[in-house]
Image 1 (cartoon, rainbow, N blue to C red):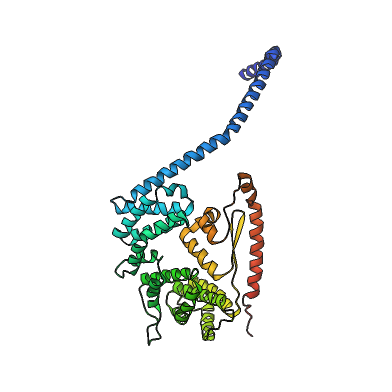
Image 2 (image 1 turned 90 degrees about the vertical axis):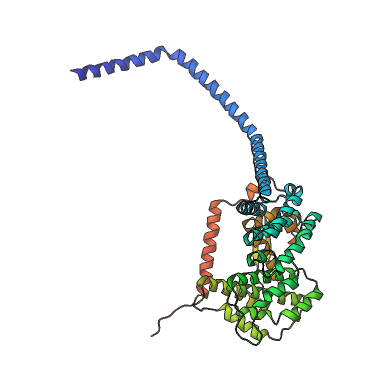
Length: 420
């Protein structure tokens, strides 16, 4: 019985609801009209907010830039702090900031203060702190460009850098970061890794010293790219017979840098004389071929792979004069690294700037001058957005590249057959 009452009441309530809806229809029409008006008014408010969005974004960007500049000012102040850990943390923060952005206007007013602080770190600091200070100094010169400001920073600290470089009692970690001086100092460092006189066994050094010798040879080869032709002739006579000795070093990185330097010297020699002839070319090619096909198990697999790849390029250039070309894309531009000189310069900046090298290639006037890229391009937001590739296009490109790479490798890869 109670169920029937509830059901009956529900049916009665349903009829009452329909009748009340009919009775209140005029009021509901007014309400819907007011709701429509409020909707349009809110829509107009949202459009006005959208129009003001661009202005608010500009304000946000300016506020963000001011906050970043405040952090950089704080880091510059902390470089002269009493605590070693605080100084090293500040130097690391400055290194990351300088390598990822162009800060010429900000640093122009603060370069002298920062230079004085870096000089104190180089004089009184120890290995890691000196290494970080030298890296920040290099990036500061890169930020200042080729004008008088950059020259002033470099000239003021050059004697100190040479002093650290030639001081055998200084930390190897500090010395390998200060390799920005003359060729003679660098030759005296990496020359000790050559074979000892009257011995067929390479000179043995600690891993830290081998890293130092590798950095010295890299810096030496970088300076060769700007040497005058008269000095190149003298270097060819003195060092081309000695450098192949470094190919027998026990350090894989030193072997690779030595091979790249030999290729660089051959390229510079051919620029001086098209018919350049080296008497020991056959012996050199035999060494390079052995390193390009090295399969010794006592060496790490990654070291062998890296070594074979580099020495195949070196051997191909010395035998046929063919240099492996590499394309570097940044923004809407593309740069081709198609010579050993250009390759050495690009890799030097890549090691210094890390992932920020593409940003600096786009915006840093000094780098664009070095690589003959012209002034930086002035691009608006629409052009930048149009230049970006969609995810689907990236997927198609990667799939096609993977397929082509697999086919190319399958042709070269040895086909193992069953022996009957």
